[in-house]
Image (tube, rainbow, N blue to C red):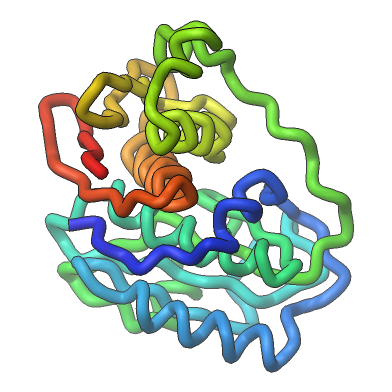
Length: 238
């Protein structure tokens, strides 16, 4: 599970990525073709990623009519939706595009018709894509000691891949910036675990986004991550 060929340019894209709701236009044909190839690569392990142009986005998104839909088969962990969807987000960011995860900013009926949604499938989020009208915003995230109970000194004492994984996970986006995860690091690896929050609807999907960030961080340090389900979340060994 959670197997995916990572790209080196996603590491820098993590720091550049921010949620964009205003665009100067849709991606051009070359960009759409490139993203379409990636969507096909991301469509497995219970998830299908498809791109559309046209009606479907609500008026809160301005300047683009292009969006990607994450379709999940029944029984697929929501973490997988976040993991695969964030890969598309990081690739789009590396291409100079803006993106925005949307849980309520789309019309479910229209999107469901577009994908010909089946009874054993669900759509929880879509991703708006376009040419950003604004500069990326600075990430506002919880301090390390709250997210993983570590000081800067303790983080520095970790192996290089673990340090990069923790820092990458920390800047992952989440609904209402709740960061519904706890990061645990030990001599063996990194764990992304559930953290109690009031707004839980997208918590599992958000943890999948965080897991993708952690995997990209480890990959940047020369390690390929493997995820295993554990009590309360997932553990990564690299």
